[in-house]
Image 1 (cartoon, rainbow, N blue to C red):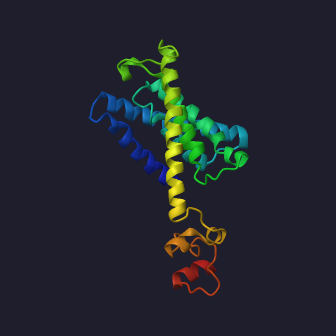
Image 2 (cartoon, one colour):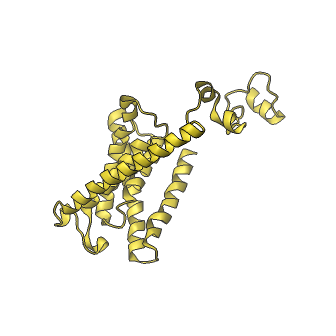
Length: 230
């Protein structure tokens, strides 16, 4: 299911990256190709780190690396060449594979690894515009490796700081308002029970079918009884 979800996400990513060209033109085609390339190298970068660090690659790592590459190429898909896209994806896959572990060291709540993948990946992709931007894509500004000097890299750094500060302050304000109005934190008992049940009064998974056994006293359909007994 993880791999199916990652594949659907990857497919949809072509739409908003290439679609940002607002036309069926060369820029859209280049953004489409860059998105594909960065997703592939992001996947490889994450797997390389897993192989070196843990001794084996994983399918979850492959899915996470692909998403990291896609995140990183999103701000830069219309600014870098194919070579730049390959490097952007590879860098994001490798760095983000380490960044997801920061939450255990810094003790912040990030169950979906948004900081490790989306924040870090987005920063990498935004900064690397200042390194790999090419005039054929931007129709003007070039990155450090193409003779543009440090000017564009400096602009990208300012953009990262400005957008990061804006996003943090606005989100913090909205969060505080919601916390006062309705509360944001589930109780420990609700977390243990599961928010599917406590909030929606239903379960997303049939654990009996998955082999975890039915709750005590529960009545299973005959087909599930046979499966559980087997």
